[in-house]
Image 1: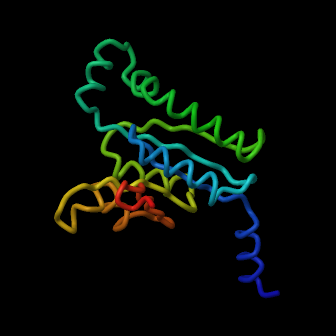
Image 2 (image 1 turned 120 degrees about the horizontal axis):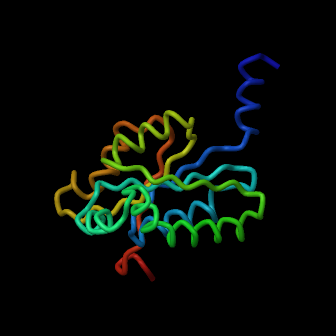
Image 3 (image 1 turned 45 degrees about the vertical axis):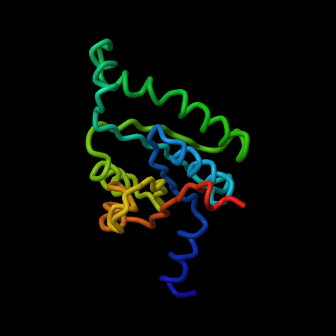
Length: 164
């Protein structure tokens, strides 16, 4: 076997690093559940990522908390806990899941996280609701299509019109 083929074989057999970008939307939770059921294998590593631009409601929590990062983490904790529980039920107790709260613009933060952690697949839900074609993807999704350093999966939430 040629060295290139052997290296490719080893890469395919190693645990994959899969990241899911989450916000507080129903669509991002659905995307994570879909990934758990259709993409993740028991030996993979799952990274749950949340990046926050400090919306006004987060700023109110920040004023009440001594540590701003702690405030953002506490807002996402129920979402993270539910998804971690589902991951462990679906993939087994040994399944590796980690959570990361990033502060700032999610677009460059997600790209940077994927590069630094050698992510194999990034999954983000697309929530764009604009009527203009370029806006339909959503701000973060459109940016990821251009700059994501790894394979990107855009998850589109089923709408009532799409349901049977």
